[in-house]
Length: 469
Image 1 (cartoon, rainbow, N blue to C red):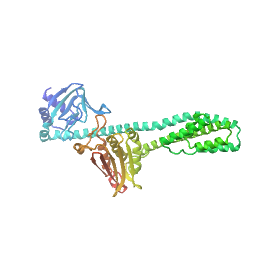
Image 2: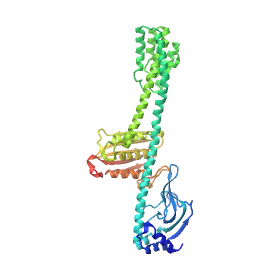
Image 3: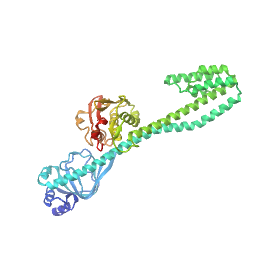
């Protein structure tokens, strides 16, 4: 392609409409026109970027590692610029550039940038404006993608947590039909026995032991109790099927023995069966109540974590509640790693002024990272205390610590120590931006076996730092 024709095509691009032709000629003179076939991969993640490419024709897509694979996040066509730019701080590729349609581009190597900035002022200005627009669009795209990924992880964990009590409630509700039929059958047999009022009072006294919440027992205590109940039933030639319900209640073998001495021998069987069925029904009712209460607590935690019933305006925020809701959202992940998570908040902790859902994002990202850092059966400790006129939140873990070589880059955008596809490198960057938005600060200390991130946020008295406050 002739140089004049290339300059004409550059001059026709919206990004260069205000650039003098002489400067575009300089660009063509020091660059090269390059054609790249569709299907070519120009670079891989973290590879150094040394060239700027101004697309004249074709289309390229930016693919980023996500969830164990590569996903297209952005594309560029004719008139757009890929690669590095003058004054750009990005030195390495955040993803792979995949050529989707045969591409023709004017390519300029980084080594020409000093001369470009010195001799082509208007061209440099146009490139800088393009860089700012590109960075803003890419930043928005990355933040949206990070939020979606974070939401996806939380939703997946929440769905798993919600499924457990929902399934338990459904199973128990289904079994309740059979349990009620057993109780009705036992009640009819008991009525047919035509017992005296004294006998019925003795039976009801034992049955009342089922009404109380059963005492907590260790596995060894529960096994011993089942053996004792089973032995008593066998000794009185009664069906062992009643043993499970009786063993899990507060009915004692001594109470059953007193009942056996009070009732006629032929009435003991139906009396014990009626008591056992009553215990089973009450136990099922308690299980359904516990399961549905757990569902309610989880939904309440989601509502508190997301502030879904609030307008997107700053307000007084309960940090202790936010931390508790965050841990509820991450409980499944902690359980999967057998990690112990301990939360301790100072009593009477005052409220912050800010955006509650965004502050909770800070806690989520810090605790999520801490859980990633610890090994199986590791420990994560979160504390919230007063520090002057601010609240100080510490998130500590007993993982291996952050290597000294990468500590300066921990808050850098797109930097991550996680395997490809398992991290965007934006979590801590987003956390820092949210903390700074609220007039606070975030720091960390690390060594093998102990890493702690510290977040300091001003109290409601510092409303002046918030936009629109």
